[in-house]
Image (cartoon, rainbow, N blue to C red; front, top):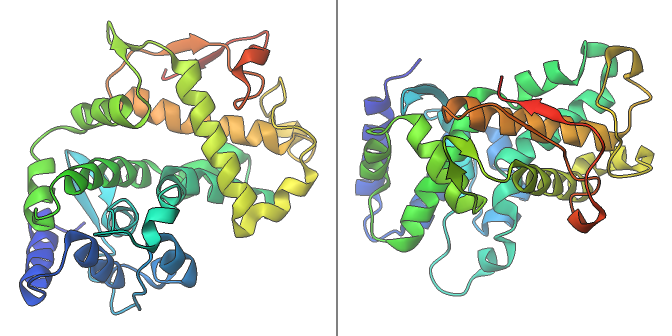
Length: 287
């Protein structure tokens, strides 16, 4: 575990060495200090900034906002959250911000699971490993930090990260829910959890459809199945059920770490078509 002060000081050094660079440029330069998988052509396309891998200084876990956070993942996701100054390539790829954060985490876990069924007891194991809490805390931080930078492009990333650390994760998650999903919290409970779940599911589906994992969608006969996975049905359960389980995995994180009350609701049959109604049963999330 690396001390947050050390990585903040490293970021401050990079900022001092690059006077006049925008926060967008600094974040993408920092991406070169995470790991090689965050400097591929896919990341160049998503961010509009080509950055080669330099060294893994920031590929560390830190305590941020009171929780273990994959800091390298945070920096990589942040680089795709911040807008380029002026009209640039990244303006046309803003939709990728979820894909290089939580939607990509969930979609990647599903893709790995589907192509390596023999390595896992169930999808839950793959989600816990490849869409972990430390990944999700990084995703939440990246979104909120990016939103602040986009409203104040002259802000220092090193100072901003220290400011973010001053509030507990539960407060940050509530802000994330409010601004990313435009959802209201009433009486310590989500007002419309079905709406959030549907948006999560739609984003994960879009990621899988467009990513290198898209081949696994060929076996999908429909986007949703009215039955969650049971271990004896690993091969038969549709990808639609995998995506639903993945969306509930992220939603459970938001509820638990946001110190919100557990919820019961009926998911929509098709997340892109809520007017078709919900399934006949309820799911419980956050217990």
